Image (cartoon, rainbow, N blue to C red; front, side, top):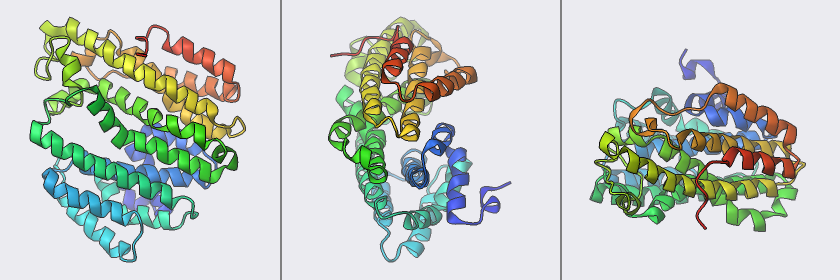
Length: 352
């Protein structure tokens, strides 16, 4: 049954769309207390629309920049947003490649319904979403223009450029989540000074893990989000990265990148443990994707299938274990630190 026929309200559309575009966040967003759960749902969906504009559009970067700008404007809910959102969605959908995931196409068509839900949320929600979408879309537009000039298959200049990309597409989300958490819970607001410097790492850790998990798939699509200078240190380029003759060097390069992801995960743990213990739902919301990312890192390390086989996945049993033990230990920092050390044992040591 199609999404549009299953729902009636704008909020219903958003809640039904979430599991169709993200299995991970469909698991952990319901852990959040109301209305924070709905605020994070619509925030995630708006970020996913921006991702679709970046990943699935056939338009040139020059044509996508004004579309990104219009989307960011719409997220401020200007007076003309209802009609303007329909025009935006029609233009954006028309530019998508035929292979675009149907769920993402339906979400993009429903942009006005997501924005309607934003308009129904408490006043502390909108500024956080506005800032995130504005910075994300502006950064994406810059990255797309650079990729188009250099070629999407070549990779980024260096590690800093890769991490900057991770910041725009995910680190901005970490900062937005912090602002939303603080808007909901005064106890979180008291700790913003400690949380904010660590917030971007939370998003970067998850994004970098996804990049490493999808190396083969991205290369076969003609894309590469990896640093050329670090590949070159191992005698690699985006063109030979998947070749069997370069497998040993590729696994060494993967270790270097996993060390970076491990470092970001360490900071993410500190971020999560700074959240007040009484905010169990917010803590679990952060703990689940963090521990699942670490499990994915473990599955990637030394695994030649990253470069040649089917997508590397963690088992459902592992996911269930994470969900169970984090629920039991959510307010016990010492136990969570011990669990994190066990889960990260064997990963390349974080660079200082």
